[in-house]
Image (tube, rainbow, N blue to C red; front, side):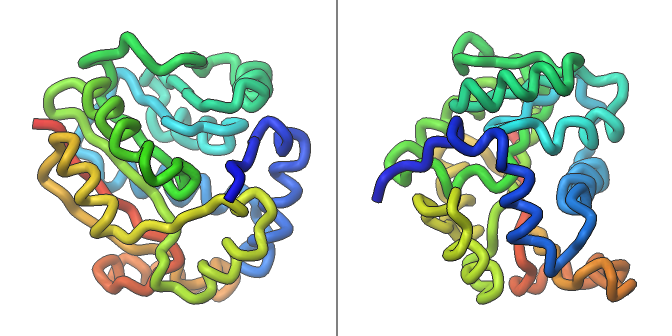
Length: 222
């Protein structure tokens, strides 16, 4: 399986994503806003520095900035062309082009559906690096596709930039984070209902039911 080069998808990423997810929501910002709201809801911190690890073209950045207007927002990605785009569109975000030298620096790090693109044998190192970059008491949020959801699996199969995707369960993600040194884990599931149904408010009662389209794992560095 060849690794997807996201430099090739910078110009058409939004279009492809919206086409793939339009059945769930016509609002292409829905998913970014949802994740920012989840972080705000479940974080216990008032972070000074926030990093999006695997920020891509920066779709989540304005929503995180809106949730934490006083925080410094940082963005890292392996795709340099994506970071070029992000830097131009969101100049308030501080772009990181090489992830090193950030020991005990960030208060909060989050990854939005990134881990399934990281080669399996590289996931532990990435998690170790994230752990090192966080201050003591720092929080790590991972949002990932739920492999138990058949609709999610079908969407991943037909998405051109998911050709290299290897989905991972919450248990696998937890074990990887635990091996890096994290603890105090919690897992929440979300994306059960399209917003057009006007019943998304029910999702808060289903957070522990492992059938949502995606899941969120929170871990803390002690």
